[in-house]
Each structure stands twice: as structure tokens, then as C-alpha cells.
Amino acid sequence: MSENQVHVYFNQNVSKWNIKDFLDNCKLVDISDKISIYLKSLEAIADTEEGPKYKRAKELLARYRE
Image (cartoon, rainbow, N blue to C red; front, side):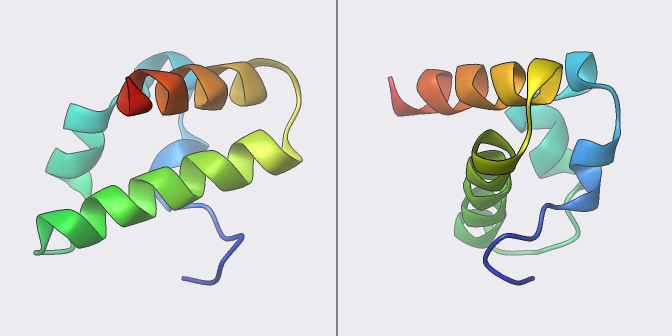
């Protein structure tokens, strides 16, 4: 997955995005790799999208960083 590529999980409706569901659905084995992909995807969305995707990505990033 390249730097600005977003995981396919984030193609679904933003109302369904959450870290627990992402971790359950991500095919990677290592938890730290899963979290890294999750955060990189949210950062890419926050940097490139507008509207609901942007808002939800920023919200989830803030929640993760609390």
C-alpha cells in the first residue's frame, strides 16, 4: 500500500467506520501493521477528501490520539 493509498475498508459508508470493525476485517496478522494502515488511511482521507469522509476521518484520528 503506497503512502496516500486508502484501505478498501474505507469505501463503505462513513457511518460504519470504526477501529474495532477495521481491525476485525483487516487481513494483516500483526496488530501494529493493522493500526498503521488504519491511521495512514485516515490521514490520507483527511488530506484529500471533503465533506463527510473528511469530517469522519478527522473525528476518528482525534479520538485515536486522545
